[in-house]
Image 1 (tube, one colour):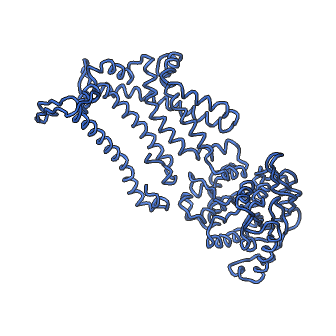
Image 2 (cartoon, chains in turn red, yellow):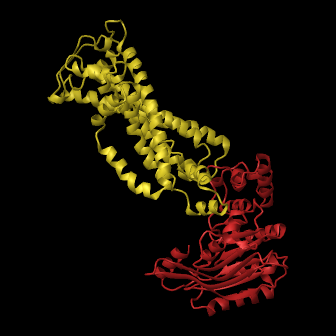
Image 3 (cartoon, one colour):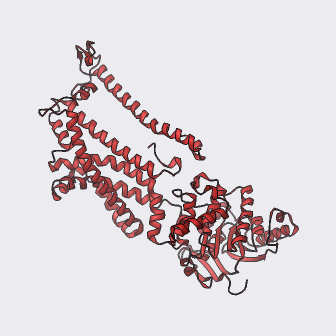
Length: 277
Length: 311
């Protein structure tokens, strides 16, 4: 936890569109993320949390401000393959087997065949899907597909894992199981995670810190330390401290301009989501 | 077909059994359709064609003397010869002792060779164009309208230009053929190479993958289903293209010459033209099925509902 932070955002803002009809998606974002941190970005739809994640990953350029990752500009970090990305949908390639999907990033960096196979097998073992290496993605359930996506994201041992509502499309039961699974993987790999979510319980359960955002323009209104023990399990969700923190996050969200889960009229919400997405 | 069953992973054994049945079903359906068409054809003649007069119908010894109750001029024996008369004409021998079937098959193979070459040229050029277009927006705006215009020119009008410009031989024919093939391939490939989830592109970008890597590992694999659809159109069209290409070139070995001759002698022996048409369409169907076969191999692991195998 000493030394330079893994991610440092200073004065980051993002404006979409031209001079006429421009939309401020993000404004005045400052954030420091230390090594091994698990930071959740939570906020109403259209608050720009996905945009912020993409700015960290150098998939979108910020309008103003600086993003430093591992002491380098974000663009450099991307070229150095410091990122692992997981999206809301698994984005697995149907024409590849599960094994070959996990090997994809290793192929891209040109690692030798035997090394690729070994690494991918290890990653599949980590997400407990070794038995499905030869399957096609569409033969797996949604939760299993998302675990393959996580295995793929970890294949290059990235310095940070960027996760954009990775469990948003899963049912509640699967989601809770995936949360525990993700914590186990995070503890095993020690990687830094930035995690976008809509779910307060999920954010509290997973994170070491929760960044609460407000909409239009998106900004971080609260930064809440989650002081639950690092070893978490099903019982953690039943502790008093957990409920206190959930309440704290909920109140922080309510303190923002837009109430949670209802970012105004549906049309405006959809429009803002389209911009942020 | 059986979408609900196909969406869950089928056990290997059952899928093997089902795939044989699935493979045979379209062939069976096709034969049924052909049979219906033949029956309809002859029924039309029975109702409104020329009188049927047979001392021994198809060698069965049954005498037929049937006067159709109605009269439609178009259903006469010149326009619509009896199916068995067309079938019989395949086995009539010419001056050199070759049956028409042998002659047409020889000509068909010759045409098929040129068609295959033209198809290959068209597929490669079409895909190449699409790759350039997908990467350079400016080229897309400049070239795509031009390609559309190119397809509005009747091929019969430009075939002489190409064939004579390139010497009247197999190369000219192949180029005319490719003119028919490349367009569907280009259009489908452009669409296919953009058919991926935008997040897949972000994924590749997050791995700092270059354009070439994205082309090989994302764009091309994502477009295979689209490409095969275009290949099916192109393969069928390539037979027509080769025949049209042969017409102005004076090539005598191909189907074009057979069709031309049959056209000139149509009133004397209408069955010959129909026989040539049958051979040409059998070639087209064969080319189509060949593409389907290759598609099945290439898309082996694809989702069952995306193989388009029954198309």
